[in-house]
Image (cartoon, rainbow, N blue to C red; front, side, top):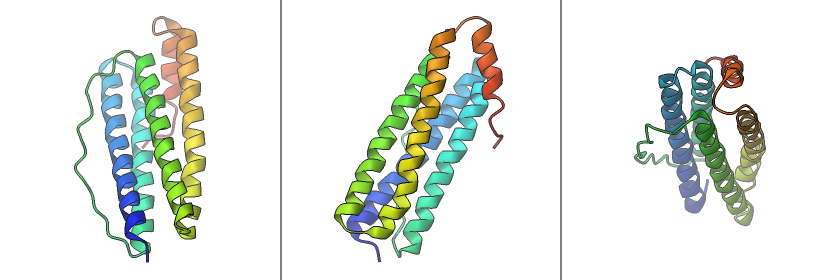
Length: 164
C-alpha cells in the first residue's frame, strides 16, 4: 500500500505529465501554423511521450493500491513566438519537470518507499535525456538562427523523429 503523501505527490506528477502533453500539442500546432512541419512532428511525438510517462505512473499508482485523482489542466497558450523561442520554452519546461521529479524522488527516499524510488529512477534518467536532447536542439537553432536555409534543414531533420 502506498502512503497518502506519496499518492498525492504521484497524482500531482501525473497531472504535470498530462499538462506537458497538452503544452507540446499546442506548441506543435503553433509550429504547424508557421509551416514548420518537422518541428511540429517532433513536438507531437514529444506530446505522445509525455502521455506515456503519465500512463506509466498511473499503472504504478494503481498497482500499489493508490487512488488516481485527475485534476483539470489549465489550457496552454496558443502563441509561442519564433521557433527558437518555442524550444527555449521547451527546455525551460523540461528543467521544471526535472525539478519536480527530483523532489518526488527525494520524497520516496525520505519515506523509505523503495518501490517508488526504483520506479522514479527511470524518470530521473529520462529527464537527463530530455534536457540533453532539447538543449542540443536549442543550440542548433541558435547557431543557424530563425531565417534562411539552416532552419529549414533542421525542420527537415526534426521531421524524421519517429511518428506517433
